[in-house]
Image 1 (cartoon, rainbow, N blue to C red):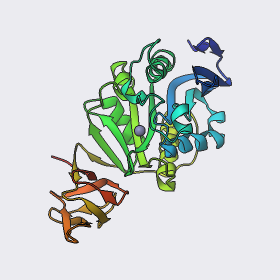
Image 2: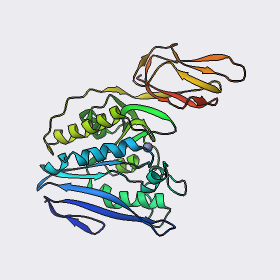
Image 3: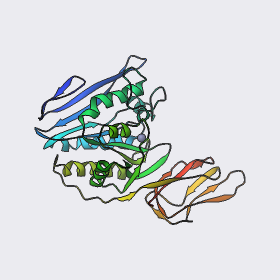
Image 4: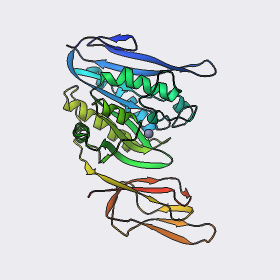
Length: 315
Ligand SMILES: [Zn+2]
């Protein structure tokens, strides 16, 4: 049966497009914060997909990706099923250029959340209890944090065949299978049998056109595949990886990158040079194996031990 659905008491009938404003918090000033939830329902039954951005408030590419999909009006022609689009989940973080909330808590480490907990915990609770029960699958858009630039990629939970199938339909340049982070939304959704893929593209507080466009096209491929919409979108192809490692700075100083995200590198190849300001010596960072560069740091000022490169490989 394809009847009405309800989000926090707001009813959405089949064939209806509705903006649901979910109240989440009140700032010390008394200003109220709400989350905009755009719901598109076809008259015909079908799957329910969520697309969302801004779970981390400073990861702007994801917010822009969902905004572009909304303003393209393609969802208004939905033929079957339902799309729930949340362009910005962490409203507070976005307004403060911050990944987290006012108390420093990370929504994506607060699942399943609690009704009377911290703000992060209450936002997680709202997702767990009011949104996730409605969906079948979805994409959660992120970027690298702390000046890390991520080549466009999907993160898929190990052993989650439904998620891997969905990732292959989305077809980003890279698919990485790894363990979901404890208390993350991806882990919570997986425990409810609903694959949510984590898309990573670009870095926080920066717009990256390739990452945004790759994200938009991936969503359209998934919607096309499920016959929820019918649009022209070019095919994509993915390289799949099951293992990854971080390369860290061996010295402090100013780092000059010699390779970039998306590149294939060979064992022993120079990835970067670090110029020490005290000794005025130069040291090199080498690839520890044949692999591809999934991500790199963009901030040139590094301390010993800082993450420089995220490398992916198989076997
Ligand atoms: Zn994130």
